[in-house]
Image 1: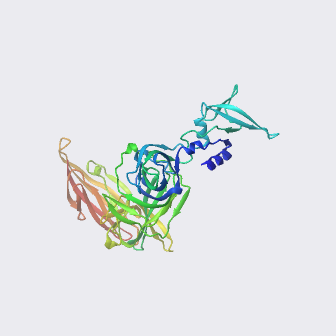
Image 2: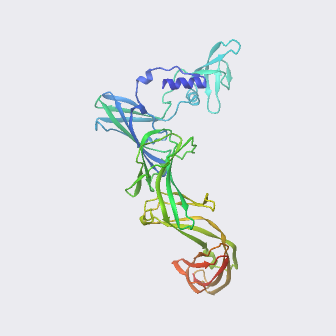
Image 3: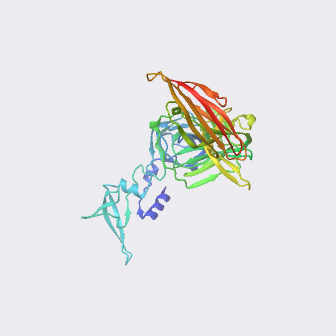
Length: 480
Protein backbone atom coordinates (compact mmCIF):
# COMPACT_ATOMS: atom_id res chain seq x y z
CA UNK A 1 0.00 0.00 0.00
CA UNK A 2 2.77 2.46 0.99
CA UNK A 3 4.84 1.66 -2.08
CA UNK A 4 1.82 2.04 -4.36
CA UNK A 5 0.85 5.43 -2.92
CA UNK A 6 4.46 6.60 -3.21
CA UNK A 7 4.47 5.54 -6.87
CA UNK A 8 1.25 7.50 -7.43
CA UNK A 9 2.82 10.59 -5.87
CA UNK A 10 5.77 10.37 -8.26
CA UNK A 11 3.56 9.78 -11.28
CA UNK A 12 1.09 12.60 -10.67
CA UNK A 13 3.31 15.02 -8.78
CA UNK A 14 1.45 14.52 -5.51
CA UNK A 15 3.04 14.21 -2.09
CA UNK A 16 0.99 12.40 0.57
CA UNK A 17 2.55 12.00 4.03
CA UNK A 18 1.33 8.67 5.32
CA UNK A 19 0.97 7.46 8.84
CA UNK A 20 1.15 3.88 10.06
CA UNK A 21 -1.68 4.58 12.48
CA UNK A 22 -4.41 3.73 9.98
CA UNK A 23 -2.71 0.48 9.04
CA UNK A 24 -2.45 -0.56 12.69
CA UNK A 25 -6.16 -0.22 13.23
CA UNK A 26 -7.14 -3.01 10.85
CA UNK A 27 -5.93 -6.40 9.74
CA UNK A 28 -5.47 -6.67 6.00
CA UNK A 29 -5.98 -9.74 3.87
CA UNK A 30 -4.57 -9.81 0.33
CA UNK A 31 -4.25 -12.42 -2.41
CA UNK A 32 -1.14 -13.68 -0.59
CA UNK A 33 -3.54 -15.21 1.98
CA UNK A 34 -5.72 -16.84 -0.68
CA UNK A 35 -5.87 -20.65 -0.58
CA UNK A 36 -8.31 -21.12 -3.45
CA UNK A 37 -11.02 -19.29 -5.37
CA UNK A 38 -14.06 -20.63 -7.22
CA UNK A 39 -16.03 -18.67 -9.82
CA UNK A 40 -19.45 -19.65 -11.14
CA UNK A 41 -20.55 -17.39 -14.02
CA UNK A 42 -24.16 -16.99 -15.15
CA UNK A 43 -25.46 -15.76 -18.51
CA UNK A 44 -26.77 -12.37 -17.38
CA UNK A 45 -23.71 -10.39 -16.17
CA UNK A 46 -23.65 -12.22 -12.84
CA UNK A 47 -21.17 -14.45 -11.03
CA UNK A 48 -20.83 -16.21 -7.68
CA UNK A 49 -17.35 -15.82 -6.17
CA UNK A 50 -16.06 -18.05 -3.35
CA UNK A 51 -12.74 -16.75 -2.01
CA UNK A 52 -11.03 -18.94 0.62
CA UNK A 53 -8.14 -17.41 2.64
CA UNK A 54 -6.01 -18.30 5.67
CA UNK A 55 -6.11 -15.62 8.39
CA UNK A 56 -4.83 -15.07 11.91
CA UNK A 57 -7.31 -12.98 13.89
CA UNK A 58 -7.09 -11.78 17.43
CA UNK A 59 -9.49 -13.21 19.98
CA UNK A 60 -12.38 -10.81 20.40
CA UNK A 61 -13.19 -7.86 18.15
CA UNK A 62 -11.25 -7.43 14.86
CA UNK A 63 -11.41 -5.02 11.94
CA UNK A 64 -10.61 -6.97 8.79
CA UNK A 65 -9.94 -5.33 5.41
CA UNK A 66 -10.63 -8.08 2.90
CA UNK A 67 -8.80 -6.62 -0.10
CA UNK A 68 -8.80 -7.37 -3.84
CA UNK A 69 -12.41 -8.41 -4.08
CA UNK A 70 -14.51 -7.66 -7.16
CA UNK A 71 -15.15 -3.97 -7.81
CA UNK A 72 -18.72 -4.96 -8.81
CA UNK A 73 -19.37 -6.88 -5.57
CA UNK A 74 -22.97 -6.73 -4.34
CA UNK A 75 -22.37 -6.14 -0.61
CA UNK A 76 -25.83 -7.32 0.41
CA UNK A 77 -24.89 -10.81 -0.84
CA UNK A 78 -21.51 -11.06 0.96
CA UNK A 79 -21.18 -13.91 3.48
CA UNK A 80 -18.03 -14.64 5.51
CA UNK A 81 -17.71 -17.90 7.42
CA UNK A 82 -14.94 -19.82 9.12
CA UNK A 83 -14.34 -23.14 7.37
CA UNK A 84 -11.80 -24.50 9.85
CA UNK A 85 -13.53 -23.21 13.03
CA UNK A 86 -17.28 -23.26 12.36
CA UNK A 87 -19.32 -21.13 14.72
CA UNK A 88 -16.30 -19.23 16.14
CA UNK A 89 -16.45 -16.23 13.79
CA UNK A 90 -19.24 -13.68 13.56
CA UNK A 91 -19.61 -10.60 11.34
CA UNK A 92 -20.93 -7.60 13.27
CA UNK A 93 -20.73 -4.96 10.53
CA UNK A 94 -19.35 -4.64 7.02
CA UNK A 95 -18.60 -1.80 4.59
CA UNK A 96 -17.68 -2.07 0.92
CA UNK A 97 -15.04 0.52 -0.01
CA UNK A 98 -14.99 0.81 -3.79
CA UNK A 99 -13.98 4.49 -4.02
CA UNK A 100 -10.46 3.98 -5.38
CA UNK A 101 -7.42 6.16 -4.78
CA UNK A 102 -6.65 8.48 -7.72
CA UNK A 103 -5.39 12.07 -7.89
CA UNK A 104 -8.88 13.18 -8.95
CA UNK A 105 -10.51 11.40 -6.00
CA UNK A 106 -7.98 12.93 -3.60
CA UNK A 107 -8.93 16.41 -4.81
CA UNK A 108 -12.64 15.64 -4.54
CA UNK A 109 -12.24 14.48 -0.94
CA UNK A 110 -10.29 17.63 -0.06
CA UNK A 111 -12.86 20.16 -1.32
CA UNK A 112 -13.11 22.75 1.48
CA UNK A 113 -9.85 21.54 3.04
CA UNK A 114 -6.30 22.88 3.01
CA UNK A 115 -3.47 21.46 0.91
CA UNK A 116 -0.01 22.75 0.07
CA UNK A 117 1.16 23.87 -3.37
CA UNK A 118 4.84 23.38 -4.22
CA UNK A 119 6.25 25.64 -6.95
CA UNK A 120 9.68 25.19 -8.57
CA UNK A 121 11.62 28.19 -9.81
CA UNK A 122 12.63 27.28 -13.39
CA UNK A 123 15.80 29.37 -13.19
CA UNK A 124 17.18 28.36 -9.80
CA UNK A 125 15.36 25.10 -9.18
CA UNK A 126 14.39 26.27 -5.70
CA UNK A 127 11.01 25.19 -4.33
CA UNK A 128 8.50 27.38 -2.49
CA UNK A 129 5.47 26.14 -0.55
CA UNK A 130 2.10 27.93 -0.18
CA UNK A 131 -1.07 26.92 1.63
CA UNK A 132 -4.19 26.61 -0.55
CA UNK A 133 -7.85 25.75 -0.04
CA UNK A 134 -9.54 23.44 -2.58
CA UNK A 135 -12.77 25.16 -3.65
CA UNK A 136 -13.87 22.78 -6.42
CA UNK A 137 -12.63 19.66 -8.22
CA UNK A 138 -15.58 18.41 -10.28
CA UNK A 139 -14.91 19.94 -13.73
CA UNK A 140 -11.42 21.27 -13.10
CA UNK A 141 -9.52 22.41 -10.02
CA UNK A 142 -10.27 25.73 -8.29
CA UNK A 143 -7.89 26.83 -5.51
CA UNK A 144 -7.83 29.79 -3.11
CA UNK A 145 -4.21 30.79 -2.53
CA UNK A 146 -3.93 33.77 -0.17
CA UNK A 147 -6.18 36.52 -1.54
CA UNK A 148 -6.44 35.13 -5.10
CA UNK A 149 -8.34 32.35 -6.91
CA UNK A 150 -6.50 30.07 -9.34
CA UNK A 151 -8.23 27.64 -11.71
CA UNK A 152 -5.22 25.52 -12.55
CA UNK A 153 -2.84 23.70 -10.25
CA UNK A 154 0.29 25.87 -10.35
CA UNK A 155 2.58 23.12 -9.07
CA UNK A 156 2.69 19.88 -7.11
CA UNK A 157 0.10 19.31 -4.41
CA UNK A 158 0.86 18.01 -0.92
CA UNK A 159 -2.01 16.37 0.93
CA UNK A 160 -1.80 15.96 4.72
CA UNK A 161 -3.27 12.45 4.67
CA UNK A 162 -5.22 9.87 2.69
CA UNK A 163 -8.97 10.39 3.24
CA UNK A 164 -10.81 7.65 5.05
CA UNK A 165 -12.36 4.90 2.88
CA UNK A 166 -10.23 5.84 -0.14
CA UNK A 167 -8.36 2.71 -1.18
CA UNK A 168 -6.15 1.55 -4.02
CA UNK A 169 -8.15 -1.67 -4.54
CA UNK A 170 -11.82 -2.59 -3.84
CA UNK A 171 -11.98 -3.67 -0.19
CA UNK A 172 -14.67 -5.21 2.01
CA UNK A 173 -14.12 -3.97 5.57
CA UNK A 174 -15.71 -6.13 8.27
CA UNK A 175 -16.05 -5.80 12.02
CA UNK A 176 -15.62 -9.34 13.37
CA UNK A 177 -15.89 -11.19 16.64
CA UNK A 178 -13.53 -14.15 16.80
CA UNK A 179 -13.73 -16.77 19.54
CA UNK A 180 -10.15 -17.92 18.88
CA UNK A 181 -6.73 -16.47 18.14
CA UNK A 182 -5.69 -19.55 16.15
CA UNK A 183 -5.06 -19.42 12.42
CA UNK A 184 -8.23 -20.27 10.55
CA UNK A 185 -9.47 -20.72 7.02
CA UNK A 186 -12.33 -18.41 6.10
CA UNK A 187 -14.45 -18.24 2.97
CA UNK A 188 -16.04 -15.10 1.58
CA UNK A 189 -18.82 -15.74 -0.92
CA UNK A 190 -20.65 -13.02 -2.83
CA UNK A 191 -22.46 -12.20 -6.07
CA UNK A 192 -20.80 -9.82 -8.49
CA UNK A 193 -21.46 -8.10 -11.78
CA UNK A 194 -18.81 -7.62 -14.44
CA UNK A 195 -18.41 -11.31 -15.30
CA UNK A 196 -20.28 -12.93 -18.15
CA UNK A 197 -20.05 -15.70 -20.70
CA UNK A 198 -21.58 -16.77 -23.97
CA UNK A 199 -21.31 -19.80 -26.18
CA UNK A 200 -19.97 -19.61 -29.74
CA UNK A 201 -20.12 -22.47 -32.21
CA UNK A 202 -18.17 -23.02 -35.42
CA UNK A 203 -19.52 -25.53 -37.96
CA UNK A 204 -18.02 -26.64 -41.27
CA UNK A 205 -20.29 -28.16 -43.92
CA UNK A 206 -19.21 -31.00 -46.18
CA UNK A 207 -19.33 -30.74 -49.97
CA UNK A 208 -22.90 -32.13 -50.19
CA UNK A 209 -24.35 -30.02 -47.35
CA UNK A 210 -25.43 -33.21 -45.60
CA UNK A 211 -22.96 -33.38 -42.70
CA UNK A 212 -20.98 -30.91 -40.64
CA UNK A 213 -18.23 -30.80 -38.03
CA UNK A 214 -19.01 -28.54 -35.07
CA UNK A 215 -16.86 -27.09 -32.31
CA UNK A 216 -18.23 -25.12 -29.37
CA UNK A 217 -16.37 -22.45 -27.42
CA UNK A 218 -17.20 -20.53 -24.29
CA UNK A 219 -16.18 -16.87 -24.37
CA UNK A 220 -15.69 -15.29 -20.93
CA UNK A 221 -15.37 -11.56 -20.22
CA UNK A 222 -14.11 -10.10 -16.95
CA UNK A 223 -14.68 -6.39 -16.26
CA UNK A 224 -15.30 -6.85 -12.53
CA UNK A 225 -12.16 -4.99 -11.42
CA UNK A 226 -10.42 -8.08 -9.98
CA UNK A 227 -8.27 -11.00 -11.13
CA UNK A 228 -9.12 -14.57 -10.10
CA UNK A 229 -5.93 -16.65 -10.03
CA UNK A 230 -6.04 -20.41 -10.58
CA UNK A 231 -9.81 -20.35 -10.15
CA UNK A 232 -12.12 -23.33 -10.23
CA UNK A 233 -14.35 -22.21 -13.10
CA UNK A 234 -17.98 -23.25 -13.59
CA UNK A 235 -20.59 -21.89 -15.99
CA UNK A 236 -24.35 -22.01 -15.39
CA UNK A 237 -26.51 -22.32 -18.51
CA UNK A 238 -30.18 -21.49 -18.13
CA UNK A 239 -32.52 -18.62 -17.38
CA UNK A 240 -31.93 -18.02 -13.67
CA UNK A 241 -34.40 -15.52 -12.23
CA UNK A 242 -32.77 -12.45 -10.68
CA UNK A 243 -34.48 -9.38 -9.22
CA UNK A 244 -33.51 -6.83 -11.85
CA UNK A 245 -33.57 -3.74 -9.60
CA UNK A 246 -30.62 -5.09 -7.64
CA UNK A 247 -28.34 -5.67 -10.63
CA UNK A 248 -25.94 -2.90 -11.57
CA UNK A 249 -26.13 -1.58 -15.15
CA UNK A 250 -23.87 -3.45 -17.56
CA UNK A 251 -20.64 -1.56 -18.10
CA UNK A 252 -19.21 -1.06 -21.54
CA UNK A 253 -16.63 -3.77 -22.17
CA UNK A 254 -13.16 -2.58 -23.13
CA UNK A 255 -10.93 -5.62 -23.58
CA UNK A 256 -7.22 -5.17 -23.01
CA UNK A 257 -6.26 -8.82 -23.34
CA UNK A 258 -7.54 -11.87 -25.19
CA UNK A 259 -6.62 -15.47 -24.43
CA UNK A 260 -7.64 -18.49 -26.50
CA UNK A 261 -7.21 -21.97 -25.03
CA UNK A 262 -6.79 -24.09 -28.14
CA UNK A 263 -6.88 -27.86 -27.92
CA UNK A 264 -8.25 -27.88 -24.38
CA UNK A 265 -10.46 -30.79 -23.24
CA UNK A 266 -14.19 -30.18 -23.31
CA UNK A 267 -15.95 -29.01 -20.16
CA UNK A 268 -17.77 -31.53 -17.96
CA UNK A 269 -21.55 -31.06 -17.88
CA UNK A 270 -24.17 -31.91 -15.25
CA UNK A 271 -27.77 -31.04 -14.53
CA UNK A 272 -28.33 -28.79 -11.51
CA UNK A 273 -31.88 -27.91 -10.46
CA UNK A 274 -33.52 -26.81 -13.74
CA UNK A 275 -30.26 -25.64 -15.33
CA UNK A 276 -27.04 -27.14 -16.68
CA UNK A 277 -23.65 -26.62 -15.04
CA UNK A 278 -20.38 -26.81 -17.00
CA UNK A 279 -17.11 -27.31 -15.12
CA UNK A 280 -13.62 -26.67 -16.48
CA UNK A 281 -11.50 -29.72 -15.55
CA UNK A 282 -8.48 -27.63 -14.52
CA UNK A 283 -7.85 -24.32 -12.70
CA UNK A 284 -7.61 -21.20 -14.85
CA UNK A 285 -6.74 -17.56 -14.23
CA UNK A 286 -9.36 -14.99 -15.21
CA UNK A 287 -7.57 -11.67 -15.43
CA UNK A 288 -9.12 -8.26 -15.06
CA UNK A 289 -10.25 -6.77 -18.43
CA UNK A 290 -9.68 -10.04 -20.27
CA UNK A 291 -11.53 -12.17 -22.78
CA UNK A 292 -10.88 -15.91 -22.47
CA UNK A 293 -12.06 -18.77 -24.67
CA UNK A 294 -12.48 -22.31 -23.37
CA UNK A 295 -13.37 -25.42 -25.39
CA UNK A 296 -16.93 -26.62 -24.80
CA UNK A 297 -17.54 -29.46 -27.28
CA UNK A 298 -16.31 -31.07 -30.49
CA UNK A 299 -18.52 -33.17 -32.79
CA UNK A 300 -17.68 -34.61 -36.22
CA UNK A 301 -19.93 -35.92 -38.97
CA UNK A 302 -23.20 -34.49 -37.62
CA UNK A 303 -26.03 -35.16 -40.12
CA UNK A 304 -27.85 -32.03 -41.25
CA UNK A 305 -30.55 -31.03 -43.72
CA UNK A 306 -30.64 -27.94 -45.92
CA UNK A 307 -34.03 -26.38 -46.65
CA UNK A 308 -35.21 -23.67 -49.04
CA UNK A 309 -38.18 -21.80 -47.57
CA UNK A 310 -40.60 -19.27 -49.08
CA UNK A 311 -42.88 -17.79 -46.43
CA UNK A 312 -46.14 -15.95 -47.02
CA UNK A 313 -48.23 -13.60 -44.87
CA UNK A 314 -51.77 -13.62 -43.44
CA UNK A 315 -52.83 -10.37 -45.06
CA UNK A 316 -52.72 -12.03 -48.51
CA UNK A 317 -56.06 -13.72 -47.71
CA UNK A 318 -58.04 -10.74 -46.44
CA UNK A 319 -58.27 -8.50 -49.49
CA UNK A 320 -57.60 -7.98 -53.18
CA UNK A 321 -53.92 -7.46 -53.98
CA UNK A 322 -53.02 -8.71 -57.45
CA UNK A 323 -49.22 -8.87 -57.70
CA UNK A 324 -47.63 -9.77 -54.37
CA UNK A 325 -43.98 -9.67 -55.29
CA UNK A 326 -41.35 -10.28 -57.97
CA UNK A 327 -38.02 -12.00 -57.46
CA UNK A 328 -38.90 -12.78 -53.88
CA UNK A 329 -36.03 -14.08 -51.78
CA UNK A 330 -36.07 -17.73 -50.72
CA UNK A 331 -34.52 -18.36 -47.31
CA UNK A 332 -31.84 -21.00 -46.75
CA UNK A 333 -32.07 -22.96 -43.50
CA UNK A 334 -30.01 -25.73 -41.92
CA UNK A 335 -31.45 -28.27 -39.47
CA UNK A 336 -29.67 -30.76 -37.24
CA UNK A 337 -30.97 -33.00 -34.49
CA UNK A 338 -29.18 -32.75 -31.14
CA UNK A 339 -29.03 -36.52 -30.59
CA UNK A 340 -26.34 -38.93 -29.44
CA UNK A 341 -26.71 -41.03 -32.57
CA UNK A 342 -25.80 -37.88 -34.53
CA UNK A 343 -22.58 -37.43 -32.50
CA UNK A 344 -24.13 -34.63 -30.46
CA UNK A 345 -26.68 -35.24 -27.69
CA UNK A 346 -25.39 -32.52 -25.35
CA UNK A 347 -27.28 -29.59 -23.77
CA UNK A 348 -26.26 -26.65 -25.96
CA UNK A 349 -26.08 -23.25 -24.20
CA UNK A 350 -27.52 -20.34 -26.14
CA UNK A 351 -25.10 -18.62 -28.47
CA UNK A 352 -24.23 -17.97 -32.10
CA UNK A 353 -23.52 -20.73 -34.63
CA UNK A 354 -21.25 -19.66 -37.49
CA UNK A 355 -21.17 -21.94 -40.52
CA UNK A 356 -18.31 -22.33 -43.01
CA UNK A 357 -17.73 -24.36 -46.17
CA UNK A 358 -14.71 -25.06 -48.38
CA UNK A 359 -14.64 -23.65 -51.91
CA UNK A 360 -13.32 -25.45 -54.99
CA UNK A 361 -9.75 -24.52 -54.07
CA UNK A 362 -10.12 -25.92 -50.54
CA UNK A 363 -10.25 -22.53 -48.81
CA UNK A 364 -12.81 -22.22 -46.00
CA UNK A 365 -15.48 -19.54 -46.58
CA UNK A 366 -18.11 -18.11 -44.23
CA UNK A 367 -21.67 -18.94 -45.41
CA UNK A 368 -23.88 -17.61 -42.59
CA UNK A 369 -24.67 -17.52 -38.88
CA UNK A 370 -27.67 -17.62 -36.57
CA UNK A 371 -28.37 -17.45 -32.84
CA UNK A 372 -29.75 -20.42 -30.94
CA UNK A 373 -31.48 -20.52 -27.58
CA UNK A 374 -30.65 -23.05 -24.84
CA UNK A 375 -31.24 -26.37 -26.62
CA UNK A 376 -31.76 -29.59 -24.62
CA UNK A 377 -30.76 -33.03 -25.82
CA UNK A 378 -33.00 -34.55 -28.54
CA UNK A 379 -34.25 -31.13 -29.71
CA UNK A 380 -33.72 -29.76 -33.22
CA UNK A 381 -31.36 -26.89 -34.00
CA UNK A 382 -32.62 -24.74 -36.88
CA UNK A 383 -30.40 -22.07 -38.39
CA UNK A 384 -31.18 -19.44 -41.00
CA UNK A 385 -27.97 -18.92 -42.97
CA UNK A 386 -29.26 -16.34 -45.46
CA UNK A 387 -31.22 -16.07 -48.70
CA UNK A 388 -30.58 -18.12 -51.83
CA UNK A 389 -28.92 -16.34 -54.76
CA UNK A 390 -30.08 -18.73 -57.50
CA UNK A 391 -33.59 -19.57 -56.26
CA UNK A 392 -36.28 -16.86 -56.56
CA UNK A 393 -40.07 -16.62 -56.69
CA UNK A 394 -42.88 -14.50 -58.12
CA UNK A 395 -46.19 -14.44 -56.24
CA UNK A 396 -49.50 -13.32 -57.75
CA UNK A 397 -53.07 -13.28 -56.47
CA UNK A 398 -55.05 -14.42 -59.53
CA UNK A 399 -58.58 -14.17 -58.07
CA UNK A 400 -60.40 -12.72 -55.09
CA UNK A 401 -64.10 -12.94 -54.27
CA UNK A 402 -66.28 -12.17 -51.30
CA UNK A 403 -68.74 -15.06 -51.00
CA UNK A 404 -70.76 -14.02 -47.97
CA UNK A 405 -70.94 -11.77 -44.94
CA UNK A 406 -72.25 -8.37 -43.98
CA UNK A 407 -70.50 -7.79 -40.67
CA UNK A 408 -66.98 -7.85 -39.35
CA UNK A 409 -67.14 -11.41 -38.03
CA UNK A 410 -69.09 -13.31 -40.74
CA UNK A 411 -67.05 -12.70 -43.89
CA UNK A 412 -66.27 -15.55 -46.33
CA UNK A 413 -63.50 -14.88 -48.87
CA UNK A 414 -62.17 -17.06 -51.68
CA UNK A 415 -58.90 -16.24 -53.39
CA UNK A 416 -56.50 -17.95 -55.79
CA UNK A 417 -52.71 -17.68 -56.07
CA UNK A 418 -49.88 -18.55 -58.44
CA UNK A 419 -46.31 -18.92 -57.23
CA UNK A 420 -43.61 -19.27 -59.89
CA UNK A 421 -40.34 -20.69 -58.64
CA UNK A 422 -37.10 -20.42 -60.65
CA UNK A 423 -33.86 -22.31 -60.09
CA UNK A 424 -30.59 -21.24 -61.76
CA UNK A 425 -28.53 -23.94 -60.04
CA UNK A 426 -26.97 -26.97 -61.74
CA UNK A 427 -29.03 -29.33 -59.56
CA UNK A 428 -32.70 -29.55 -58.66
CA UNK A 429 -33.94 -28.10 -55.40
CA UNK A 430 -37.04 -28.56 -53.25
CA UNK A 431 -38.67 -25.38 -52.00
CA UNK A 432 -40.99 -25.48 -49.00
CA UNK A 433 -43.76 -22.92 -49.43
CA UNK A 434 -45.23 -22.02 -46.03
CA UNK A 435 -48.46 -19.99 -45.93
CA UNK A 436 -49.97 -18.62 -42.71
CA UNK A 437 -53.77 -19.01 -43.05
CA UNK A 438 -56.12 -16.80 -41.03
CA UNK A 439 -59.55 -17.79 -39.70
CA UNK A 440 -61.28 -21.03 -40.71
CA UNK A 441 -59.56 -21.99 -43.97
CA UNK A 442 -59.97 -24.70 -46.59
CA UNK A 443 -57.90 -25.44 -49.68
CA UNK A 444 -60.44 -26.03 -52.48
CA UNK A 445 -58.02 -26.42 -55.43
CA UNK A 446 -54.26 -27.03 -55.69
CA UNK A 447 -51.62 -28.15 -58.17
CA UNK A 448 -49.53 -29.83 -55.45
CA UNK A 449 -50.78 -31.61 -52.36
CA UNK A 450 -50.49 -29.50 -49.22
CA UNK A 451 -49.68 -30.46 -45.64
CA UNK A 452 -51.58 -28.92 -42.75
CA UNK A 453 -48.75 -27.65 -40.57
CA UNK A 454 -51.06 -26.33 -37.85
CA UNK A 455 -54.46 -24.74 -37.37
CA UNK A 456 -53.09 -21.61 -38.97
CA UNK A 457 -50.59 -22.76 -41.61
CA UNK A 458 -50.37 -24.90 -44.77
CA UNK A 459 -47.24 -25.89 -46.66
CA UNK A 460 -46.26 -27.37 -50.03
CA UNK A 461 -43.05 -29.13 -51.11
CA UNK A 462 -42.29 -28.01 -54.66
CA UNK A 463 -39.46 -29.60 -56.68
CA UNK A 464 -37.80 -27.12 -59.05
CA UNK A 465 -35.62 -28.72 -61.76
CA UNK A 466 -32.04 -27.64 -62.44
CA UNK A 467 -31.94 -24.53 -64.63
CA UNK A 468 -35.72 -24.66 -64.69
CA UNK A 469 -39.00 -23.43 -63.26
CA UNK A 470 -41.96 -24.83 -61.35
CA UNK A 471 -45.41 -23.42 -60.62
CA UNK A 472 -47.64 -23.82 -57.60
CA UNK A 473 -51.29 -22.79 -57.86
CA UNK A 474 -53.97 -23.08 -55.20
CA UNK A 475 -57.37 -21.67 -54.21
CA UNK A 476 -58.37 -21.16 -50.58
CA UNK A 477 -61.65 -20.31 -48.88
CA UNK A 478 -61.40 -18.38 -45.61
CA UNK A 479 -64.18 -17.76 -43.06
CA UNK A 480 -63.81 -15.14 -40.32
